[in-house]
Length: 470
Image (cartoon, rainbow, N blue to C red; front, side):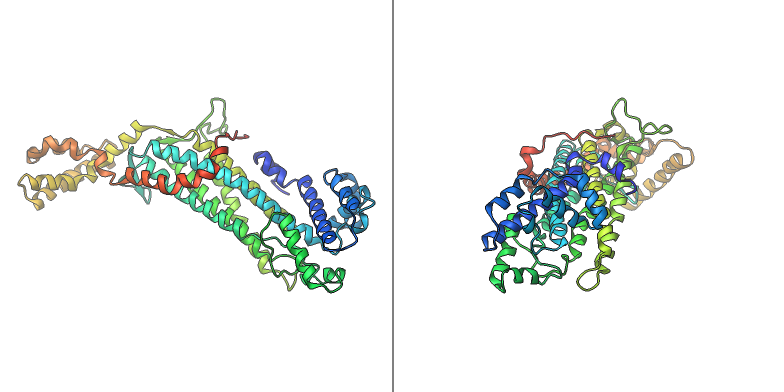
C-alpha cells in the first residue's frame, strides 16, 4: 500500500510485528488449535495426538507454500488451511472443522487489538508521565496566556501543560472503555447462525453454546458477541478507530501548540546536534511531522464508517480489502505519533527569560485596573485615573504598533506626577505572579488527583526511553 514502507520504518518494532504476516498466521493457527481443543472436550472424535501435532507446528509456517496455494485457490484462509495440513497430516481432517473464514479473520483482529492496545496504554503512560513531570517543574512559572493567539491573562507554563495532559487522560479513558467493550466474534459459522456446529454436535444446542464460550475464554476474552452475521458488526471497527482518531486530535493540538511556542522562542522540543530538519529550514522539528501524521490518522476514520454503513444483510466482501489497509495504517500511524510525542516530551526546553520579556511587553496594559484601584485607595478619583491611563496606554500602543518600539507604558506612568502616590507600589502591582490566579494550585491538584493515580499501573515499565527512528 502507498506509504506503508514509510509508516513501517517509523513505527515501533512491536507494532510492526503485530501487523506482520507471521503474527497473523500464527494467530490463525492458535485459533484452529483452540477450536480443536474445545471440539474434542465436547465429544467430537479428535485425538490428543492430532492436537499435539498442531501445537508442534503452530509457528513453522511455510510462506512460500502458502503463497503458491493462495495463487491456485484465490483464497488466503484455505491456502493456510492446506499449508497447515501439509505439516500436520494426522490433524488435517479436523483443522478449521465447522468454521468459516471469518472465524480466523475477525477473531485474529480482536486478539491483535487487545495486544496492541496494551502497547498504547504503555506509550501513553510514558508521554503523560513526562508531561506531568514538566508541568510540576513549571507549575508556577508565569507565561502569557493566549486566546485567539492574542495575549490574554497570564497562566503558567505548567498549567498549559496540564491542558495537554487533560486531553491525553481522556484518551486513556477512551481506550479503556474501548478495550473493556471489545468482545470476541467467537464461533458463529457462515452467516452467524452456528448451523454447521449444530450439525457437528447433532442438534445439541448446549454444546454449541459451550463451544463458543470455551474458545472465547481460550482466546483471553470474557465475552463474545451474541449475534453476528458472517462477520462481527463493522461498527466494532468504527469504535476501535474512533479512540485512535481522538488521540490523533490530541497529539495534533499539543504539537501545534509546541510549534507556536517555538516560533515565540518560549519553548522548543529537543533537537539533537546532528539532526537535520530540512535543507532550507534546519530548525524544522518532529512536532510538525506529528501534526502531519495526526491529520492522516484522523482522515482514516472515514474508512470504517463507510464500510459499516455499506454492509449488506449478513455481509458483503467489500469490507475486506479496505480493512486490510485502513486498520493497520491507523494503528501504525498512532504508534508513530505517540513514540514521537514521547521523544518530544522527554526534552522540552523552556526559555524563562524570553517568556519574561514577553510578559513585560504586555503586562503594563493588563495591569491598568490594578493601578486604578491603587490610586483610588490612595484617595484619587477612579474616572480621572481611568482617563489618565487610557491616554498613556494609547501613546504606548502607538510606540509599539507604529514605531516598532517597546511598551513604555510603565515609564510613562512613572514620569507622570499624577501617579506619584503609588510609585512605590508599581513593582508589586506588576509582579507577574499576582496575575496567575490559582494556576499553581490547579496543577498540584490535577496531577495528584487525576494524573498520578492513572499512571500507577504502568510505573514498572515507564522508564524505557523510546529512541526516535529518523
